[in-house]
Figure 1 (cartoon, rainbow, N blue to C red):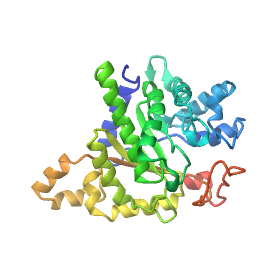
Figure 2 (tube, rainbow, N blue to C red):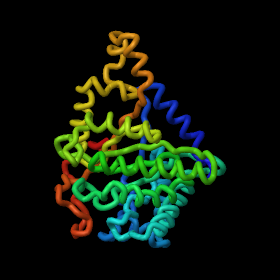
Figure 3 (spheres, rainbow, N blue to C red):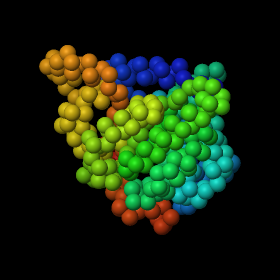
Length: 327
């Protein structure tokens, strides 16, 4: 397989992000909600995957991707989140075929002539239900299921994005699936480009992951787990929850100096560097590091027993958080 077309753009963006804590990577908005606003049917069984399953919506999806880029997004996310066993896509080959379509559409949207104008993130959503750490698959089963969307997305994306993870074990499944995928490809086709990985967790209102794990507990576990595979984990993010919950999680990270060595731009970096010993600096330089990120939503808090199959209508939006306030 060839290197994804946006690889040079990816390197430039990562170098830029590493260079300064003031640098950011602006992601896209809620693709599903925008699709529904533009006339795509809100199918409560397969949600936004209907824009992939039904060819009549492919053009609308590409326009949605392009509208985010036109608005300033530096990365867009494939519309593959809902193509999972939990919403009825149980045939692995069918999952691979459908996510390939989502990847093709996203790649077209970011291509201007011979160059890419934005990065493509390959969305890997929860396999069963969002927000439900109690319903995740057994580890080996989950690893096998993640194989199909990874294979389908690989030729089209720059970064894999495991999003709305509700427990660390769910993220471990993605890491193992990626590791096995790359090992298999290198044996069959020789060495190939390894796309980095972002992992994003959904939070409870108290700032903890849905499983009850603290973010300061999860970050070191993830980094070491990925490093030993090896899978290049470049960032931990928070999504699909209230902005206030994300603020609590970030404050917890700020208040926990022992994990700051894992961050490219730790809080109070200047003050820390002046008081850090030489041996500590050497150890920190050898530690894998990550970026932090977030993309909250405007939904009202989601109940812990929520399930897509039993939801009769879309989750209500908050009335106290208008777009300008969010920004």
